[in-house]
Image 1: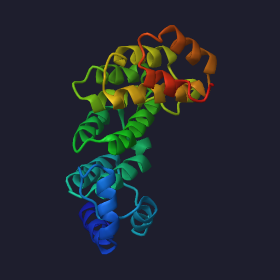
Image 2: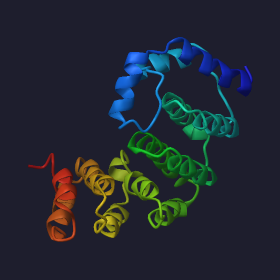
Image 3: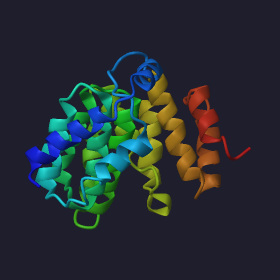
Amino acid sequence: MNKLAYFEQIQTLLHANANPQRAVEMRAYMRNQFEFIGINTPLRRQLVRSLGSLKWTHDDALQLAQALWTLSSREYQYVAIDLLARHKKGLQLLDIPILLELAQNKAWWDTVDGLAAIVGDVVRLGLGQQVSAQQQMDQALESSSMWVRRIAMLHQLGWRTQTDADRLFSYALRLAPEPDFFIRKAIGWALRDYARWNPATVQKFVHAHSSSLSPLSAREALKHLR
């Protein structure tokens, strides 16, 4: 199946399974910012799988994701994220700017966090070939887009003992003065994730910088340590 046929069949399948009542509920949950067809995640993924286990080149995957992103219903952005996640091993560090561009288009926490996980996987895989792989995240931390800064803060989620703790803590302090809820929540989330593997270090960091970190960030960071 070529890309155009796949692109068209996804739209046909999703619209054939539209649920207008659920769409209203989903739209309300997202503060009426986006249109929805009304398909929950399990069904959406089942429908996409019914098209077959197709393997695309990383260029094809990126192009399909970009095309899906132009469609108005939010489910298509979710399909794009799932598609990119399935092809993450083929993505390269050079593709990160495209992922960050997608994150800024129709941006909200749902798509941004999905892309953050993919960016994190690409960076971690890239460390094997390029020691400076995380420098793109250093640059992202200085972005004018709050959502890109959130991705930078979250990109090490799930890295466990591979986490660059110095980077994690420096990012947290760099973003700590920001008042936005999504940034403060991301700081706490990233610290809490690392605390699963190095609780004493995270606890020491939070206590040492309690005057800099927001109460929300500190509370989230220590959530499972009390």
